[in-house]
Picture (cartoon, rainbow, N blue to C red):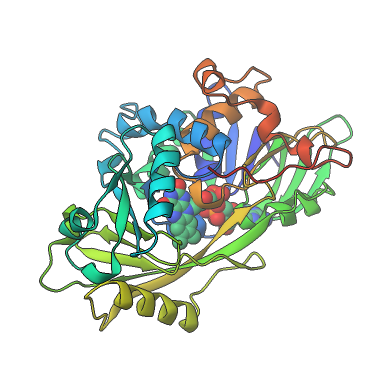
Length: 385
Ligand SMILES: Cc1cc2nc3c(=O)[nH]c(=O)nc-3n(C[C@H](O)[C@H](O)[C@H](O)COP(=O)(O)OP(=O)(O)OC[C@H]3O[C@@H](n4cnc5c(N)ncnc54)[C@H](O)[C@@H]3O)c2cc1C
């Protein structure tokens, strides 16, 4: 029987980064069902960092992650985990007022965001159909993320601190121990842990159910993506293009373009697969908005972005289950918030306060706490910019 201080369930970016952050001076075991960490959402993202994305709490967590990602500690990665990319929200003729409004809203969050004219937008991404462009909101500071570098740096850092990563270890039962802590049954043997961290991604509510803990109402939503070649164009310097109504996006990815219909189809937790219809819809939208003819897809996939009702992640001890800690609901921003989520999670696991820099950005433990889902708690609403 293994006995550890903290067992983290889930070897995606959420579990791996929090496990590393809390491993100093603690015995930490990371349990992952699959044979490889990062098999699910964390192996399927679009790898963008944008400080205008998400609600106020999410944006603060992203800003609180930026310095780490730009200049990670030497033992994490010996290189920057970001690269300049830029993002452009492109509107059609007739949408000028919406473009102006969005530019003002986003510039209030990140001052470098600005409205640009149609000709400027087409000059930046020459495959855009000029007659379909009425203008755009340009976000120069959006960044590409090295998501594999983030995951591997977290796992390496955990091992360097004496922690263990156990793959092929599906948690099948969780029972509180009489003196405190948890007994965890896994397909790779039983473990006892003082604290269980639930970082099971789309399966976080299912994992809570194993422990008899009330769900937080997580809704996994499928998002489809694919890669295609763009013959005759050097796409690497193009910004990401998101259409103003968010019905598709394209983003350079290692010499190809990544396309997505920006779908959000509710799904049970599963190994998400792309549906033909979602791929076809995206191809059609991209072909209408550009001069591109997409002949062949080199790769297609889907992943689950899991949200709770207010779209703020869930981080903290469950109020009704001692020693049960949530790290879930990272939605479409799990990578760009991971460094701050890990630091905050480690502080809360140690019983400490919110780290000062995050508190200055307006992050409170209450905003992320699972206590907000308890009966009688005020009903939270989504707060998008
Ligand atoms: C198409 C797409 C585009 C995205 N684009 C971006 C982006 O541009 N920027 C960004 O920041 N984010 C993006 N995201 C979101 C980001 O990928 C997620 O927020 C993040 O990966 C969630 O990480 P996680 O560790 O919570 O989940 P996961 O990576 O799914 O990890 C959870 C792990 O828990 C394991 N597990 C579950 N149950 C058990 C159990 N009982 N026992 C053991 N292990 C278990 C699973 O096998 C899984 O590996 C995107 C997501 C998708 C799908």
